[in-house]
Length: 433
Image (tube, rainbow, N blue to C red; front, side):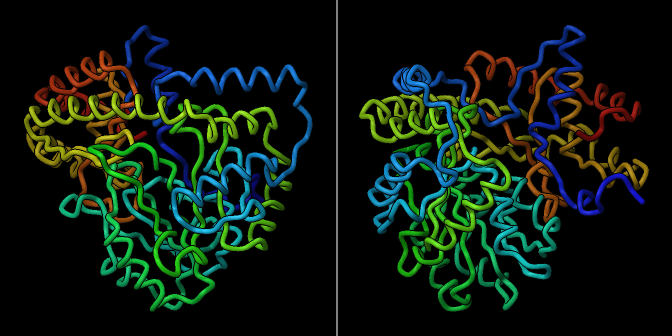
C-alpha cells in the first residue's frame, strides 16, 4: 500500500511557482535575481479598491457569504459581461471563485468522464493540461505556432474534434504568448463547433487578460459569436486588470442555472465561500469610474515595456521575438541561441532519463538563472504535449523597467557565454526546474 493515491502521479503543476525555491536558494546566498518568471502585475492595488476593503472590514463584513458569490458582485459581473460581450446574462448563472484557477479543475471534474477528450492550447496556461489525465481525460493539444501569431482558427480546431470531444479550452489574449484570435478566427471556430459538436460540449473561454490589449485592439469573445453563448463558459477575474492577484477574485458565467448550481456545490465542498469584504471591493472595482482610468494607465506602461523588451531581445544573437498583442509576456524564439551555445548536442549527450526531464530551452533557462541571476520560464512549462522541437522562453514584463533592462543585459551576456554553458551542463546540476 502506498501513502499517496495513484492519481496524484497524474497531476502536474505550474512551474512559475515551482521555480520559486531555486530563486530563494540563490537569494539566500546573497545573489541578486531579476524575476521575470511570474505573471503578477507590479502595479499597486488602486486606492479606491483598497479603501473599500478597509471600509468593509470596519463594517465587520467578515462572516460566511453566499457560496455562489454575493448577489451584488454577481449582478455587477452580469452587467459587465452583457455590456462587453453583447449577450444576455443573469446573476443566477454567475459563480465567484477564489481566483480563476479553481474553475479550470472544476470544469474538468464536472464535464469530463474517463475517455473524454479535452482540446486545449499548447503552449498555454499549464493547469489546462495538468488536470486532463488526473480526471481520466484524453489531452488533445492545439499546437500554436509562431507563424500564425500563436493563434488558430476553425481549420486547426476541426482537425481535433471527434465524437469524444467534451471540453474545449480557449485563452485570448494568451498566456504565455500574448497571441490573440481575431473576430474572423472566432467565427470560424464557432461554425466548426456548431457543425461538429453536440450541445453538451462546452467551451471554456479564459478571458482573464481581456483588458490588457495593445495597439488599440479590442477584446473579442467567442461567446459573442452566433450560437455560442449557450455553449460557452466565460471566465475572467480581478488579478490582472486590477493588479490584485492576492485578492483571489475570479468568476465564471455559465450557459445554464443548473451548471452554476453544480459549480456552487463544488465551491461549498472545497472552499465554503470567498471573503465577503473582498467581494464587495471587487463589485466596486467593476462599477467605479476610476477603474478604467487605472487600467488604461497600466496598459500604456505595459505596451511601452513590451516595445522596449522586444527591441532589446531582437538585438541578442540567436533570438527572434515578435510583438505580442496582449497580456504582459513576450515569447522569444531562442533556437538560434541554443545552436550558438552548443546546447543541442549538450542536451543530446545527456543520459536518457535526464534528457527526458529537460529540453534545450530548459537548459538555457536554468543556466540563465543560476549563472546570471535571471528567472524566466521555458516552453515546457506551458504544456509538455507538442513542446518537442520548440525552443522558446516566456519573459514576464510585469516588472519595473529598470529590472527589465538589467535582466536583458544579463541575458545578452549569457547568450554568448558558450564556455560557461558547457561548464554548467558538465556539472549536471539544476538542468530542470
